[in-house]
Image 1 (tube, helix red, strand yellow):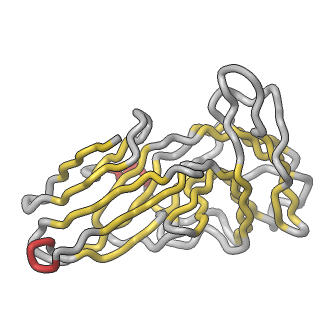
Image 2 (cartoon, rainbow, N blue to C red):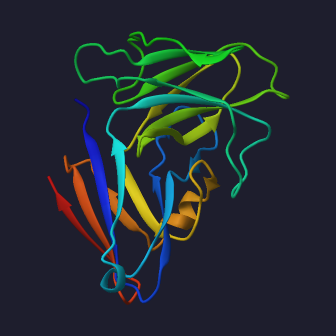
Length: 222
């Protein structure tokens, strides 16, 4: 049975706030630009007035993702349209894992996973086929299952006939504002003065509170 990582948000601010959630970008092989998508966005009223809390749940299962796009990613715009994902394992310290998938672009998809011995520790690999780029643009990277749907969390623009190694990080952020899920956002800017939810220590639940003065409080639960 898969493990759910849960973030519960309480708003003690004076008014209703919009919150959005996003993930620490993975470490990618090579020097390509890494882009981030918003994973979820929702309004939440003042707790004293409404008694409401906002819950964000992400499956701890790792996914490789590919997405077709019309243009190079632009902040504030959807990262792409047609997509495919595949549950995948990360390279362990010892032994082997199904840490490698091969993309197809016609039709768009990712192959059943296989084992590769030369993928770095804690990473998985996506191999892209030959295609004409431009005009064809494909984003590849780490996808996550959020509140029942799979979203490309962070990614690079793929190169034809190449390997992309991706090392996901189990660290999520909560920020005030609105970025619809699947919308490209500025990770560096958005992470400033945000609530940091670090699940790398084995925690499964983190309670986040937006305080009346605009600061954040977090409480971790194993």
